[in-house]
Image 1 (tube, rainbow, N blue to C red):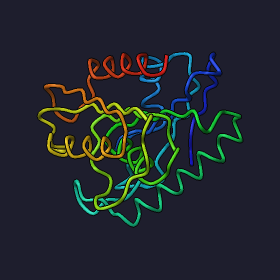
Image 2: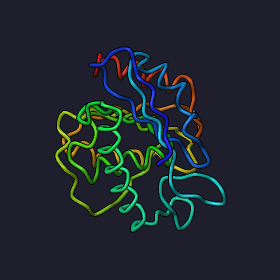
Image 3: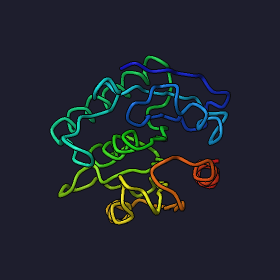
Length: 202
């Protein structure tokens, strides 16, 4: 998978793994990493799927309708990639915190849903429920931040609340930050994520 790795100044800090939204690139979320944890190493990944020329992390059948078979395949591909890349770049595979936006938040959520120990924590900006009707692994001690828009046309407040419930039932401490906005990522949402990160990982 195409990616950028930037070595941080603090080897103990969590490695931030960045997942862009639909049509994004691996450079897009680098400014967020600087705001959230400037001393961390950063691994920023480009999605392997193209939709009308726009990179994504997995296919969808329609707006808000995931190709579940492809989601499962791409989530395993990503999990394997993280294992290999940790060895290549010499970072601790057990010390990863994801930052994802939209489609990128969904693939990060899918990692949490499918692979125990995949992430130490996650910042999910405008995520949806990746899959329904599956048993989640034990997420005790895996803090999760969800950024959501009260008027998000893609990810409804009900979807956000459902995801929050599923994650909490799996044991994760979840904080939801609401913005009076739509699907866009606002600076105040990123600042809230940075405060959450400092509280949980500093």
